[in-house]
Image 1 (tube, helix red, strand yellow):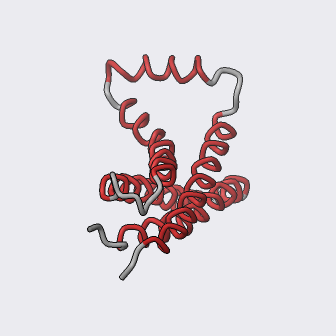
Image 2 (cartoon, rainbow, N blue to C red; image 1 turned 120 degrees about the vertical axis):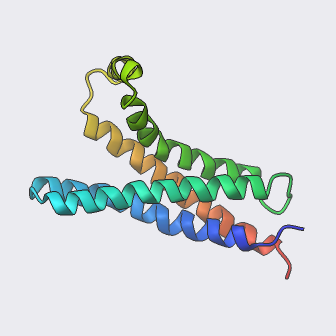
Length: 149
């Protein structure tokens, strides 16, 4: 019998992390307009760490509650998708460091997102991650009533 510990953590990380992910791009924009490099770097690092934490907790809770009827698979999958979308830019940045893959990945990303401003595209993706994270965090909070202790 699974405990509700990971459901509580998933609800907390989903709601609080999603709220931070929703607000962080505005801080990045304000730091960019004000030309405050230190603040931009700090917010960016916190944003990346939050996305990694969302991915880690989503993966752990998805595997932990696999096959458990008390936690909806929709909630677990939504939280996992939020984590994957949030960590995709980090994964692409790591792949760009590989010499023979870097140019190909740049060409692929440029051809997919041609004509768009990169910050605008990432801004929208971050908002999607924040919304999915908050929705799944609320879903985990609703699933807590299914646990008896």
